[in-house]
Image (cartoon, rainbow, N blue to C red; front, side, top):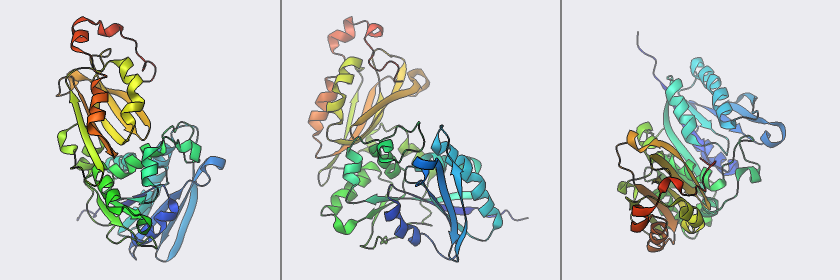
Length: 357
């Protein structure tokens, strides 16, 4: 008996549902079924609306209830049986899943890959607004402040969501490209954030100028590697048109109080940074470093002894008009000095991050 072929799935993400509509249309043909999820009713009624359609018109619609826990987790859990049903019906040979604006591709794709063997992720497409993307990547506005949070525990900001959507995408569609005077700079910025991506401009009607679905470009291992620990020299793209990526590295630990005091200076001019750092008062812990816009966060990644690396600090930062020498000087000033290395009791240093991670 011949094994049944897997159904390819193309995933569409992006903050603006309006800008996504022409792209969604471009992803759809006569053999495609579309599952579109919106969050218009989430702030008021606590539900995510979904609709299923194909070239013949609407097929079904409904709602997923989102409680007080992780909205993204509940969405993924609720989507799986719906996708399974569509695959089992066997009427279509391609699925397009349009995620709600605040959904990141990575957790959704990871679940599909691990628990839905009937489906193969084919393409992850992200719609980016050429007029607003720099502002979205550079600020500190919370999703909750815009009514876009996926549930009460969602404390992400717009910059963090935008960066993560871009970093996981095989294709980035630049909507409103005709309204941007610096289109090449935006393309360079997106490639610095994700060299895996193909940047496709859209015309004045929002229609993309290149393929955005069924490209066969998605590579789970490559996507996970890029979205994981951002800490090696091969992640640094050549500077061009004002977009710069900086690699900073040190074999000395960071002084926690000086790092905390310098956070604002570190993220100044940086749209995105990621890496792994070594805090002097936590000598055995590998600490995740991440920033998006004006917000920075740290978290644990396990123990240095469990990795292939000696304890060190490595951060990769991307910005527009970024001064590499200034950034490296700010980070260097946060390190323990030679005399502190020799004389300080590291474990007794004040910990401004206590209770944070």
